[in-house]
Amino acid sequence: MQMLNRIARKASSAGRLRRPRRSFGIALTLAAAVAGAGAPAASAGDWFPSMGCTATGGGHVCLGIAGGKGEVSRFRVFRTHLKHQICGYQARVRVYQPTRGTLTYYSAKRGGCAGGWAAESINPGVVFEHNSKACGAWFEFGRWLSGTPCNRILHH
Image 1: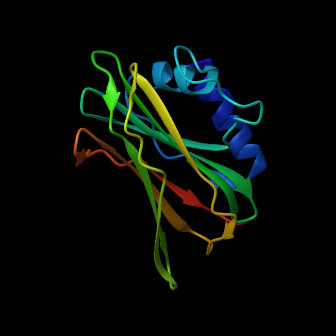
Image 2 (image 1 turned 90 degrees about the horizontal axis):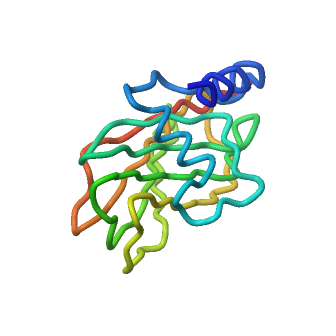
């Protein structure tokens, strides 16, 4: 929970990207996502001023957004599931802009399996409209999961 509070404080002080309300059990998900416990090695720059998660399909799907002043340098979609492997997966991020419409980004599709934790990065390098809403989605085992975490992209 301390990690989540630290992220929330940094996001508030940065004033650029806002984190949505958290769901129960998010601390474990964020700890695994940020620390990389039992997961592919995280790069040194894996810090997201905006992070939100939602429970789905026996685990969580999380969306992290990195960037500033409306420009998003990276979206990162995380998936955790403690009871089974994650196979044949892909991430999607849709950005709903107030006046310019919707943009959709996909990660590469992965054919293999990951043991209980997987993450995909999408690097748009785009300045989105103020108050745009970004929503992450996760595909595995031939279907898109129902839970979609969403975060606002704010300019300050």
